[in-house]
Image 1 (cartoon, rainbow, N blue to C red):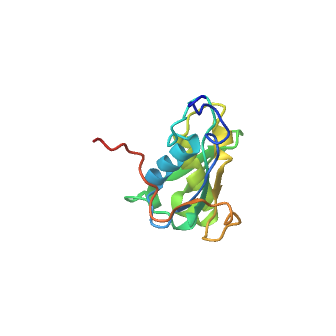
Image 2: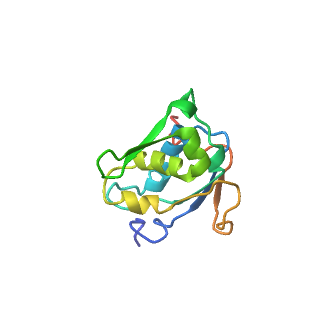
Image 3: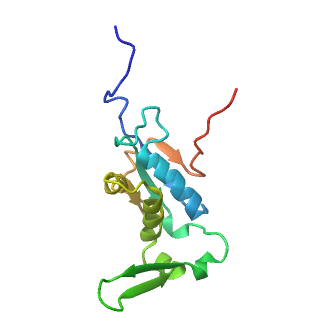
Length: 153
């Protein structure tokens, strides 16, 4: 009888995490979400395999940011036409579409490879508290996502 678990379906089972962004800092929250999407919290983590979980983020409109970034931080994109550099400030983008802010932050913290788009597909962002994935949620992180640490004994 073998005691090794290996690449079984149970080991690769995806869990749904609910994260409340109210009062959280954007960068700290984004880095923890990126770790969960990659699957680094699992003992079977492999950089070349996609073993991460689903993350449902609610209250994206109420995310916090440190310092004077609310007025000073700019998001830039280019339309690929001459003179097509567009800029939008953080506070205006938060009013218009708060999900873009968090998606851009998490995207920048994921590895730049072929799995990036697939991992971002498992991130669901909602501006307020209501969402359609209530039945799927297994783990709730209402206050903070716990940091991945190992206790030294």
